[in-house]
Length: 239
Length: 239
DNA sequence: TACGGGCATTAACATTTGTTAGGCCTGCTT
DNA sequence: AAGCAGGCCTAACAAATGTTAATGCCCGTA
Image 1 (spheres, chains in turn green, orange, cyan, yellow):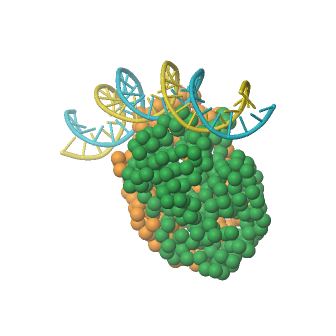
Image 2 (tube, chains in turn orange, brown, red, cyan):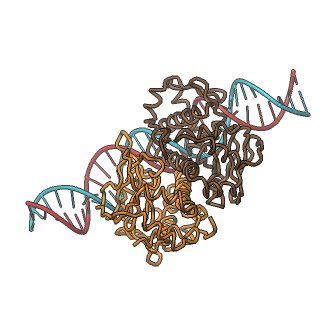
């Protein structure tokens, strides 16, 4: 059941059986969320952290004018709010973008891990660092890439991340977001989001229909995106 | 000499004398960097992490077309590349935006801290988590705020962060960035950056000249920015 | 003192992006 | 079967942002 988590953490460094057992021991109950439901509310002070077993979720903030911005997309194997273990107060919400199957890890047991399992602690820390690296890449994309390049970069990133947790199917993956939701990822209007998706389709590097994205020309897509996966730290080495 | 670091880490939770000693013990040599010099090179694999004692620095990425985007600004007391301790390979560069006085902490000694000082480890982890929270706020600003609001938000954030490490002077602080550099922060052209700064000046909430920023109307500035400092986790509580 | 470079500022114009509105599907409900 | 809601897509126009170029200022240096 925790296979995705093991794949996710294990991509950076070897994960021992004892460590897997410690992780499993930190888990409490599981739960399902329907599309659109809040998994964690902004401003709350959770006493557990949420692991996604299956489904797609996103962090978001809402502004006074009603505008919404997603700040990350979370795939199976992601600890969506590991932050709250130390940050205490959630400064953003987390919403299910598809039906989500999640499991909760008690903060008190995570704390025990930090007291007794330094290497596993470093791997969990690393998980949040990769999260930050992804944020930086998004900032670069929002600030200095063309919108087409930004979208291409996102497609590359999602494909690679989903591949790690075995959620791709050949060169395709399931992306349950509507174009309005995609617009809240890239920070665009819906109309322009539609234009940009159209542009990417037109160059022929992806097909995108019915929430299924297929990469038709990985090399050219990567080129448009200037995608370099270094920031995802997928190299397995001692940490 | 490490006062800024103690102030920075200590804002989130009490820092014991033993922990301060451990931090001091992790430090090796110090060094000065001139404005514009690279403190850490993109793609390098440092064996130490860099603490800013004095000066302003920034993380950045450069794209193929020469465009540059800053992904964070780093103030005294910030561990600019604590990431590299676990990420290993730098996926971005760090440049001095003013003369910088820095000190290096050996990764091997940081590792010892993770083995022997769980609470201090959590505080260091937390430091990187706040970093991520700042990134998220930047993403929201880039995606969904007006440019004026984005700039106002940045001014609020810098003021608060500098205040923690006692680098403010009343309602003023020193901001050594040129408008071209500011443009690389917000992801704008230089010309538009100039317009936006002009707009903020015109409403009369800040004065901005000779690299000195003075907040003339904090309340209204905060209002324009929709600035809520929760994300900085400045509350002192057990972590 | 004269010169040149970097920086802030502005103008004029080009391009990108947002807004408003509507059409056309599809799937679901009555 | 009719009606309705949501999602995708397009058009026409408005607003924001980028580009190019020019001006003036300050400052360090020949």
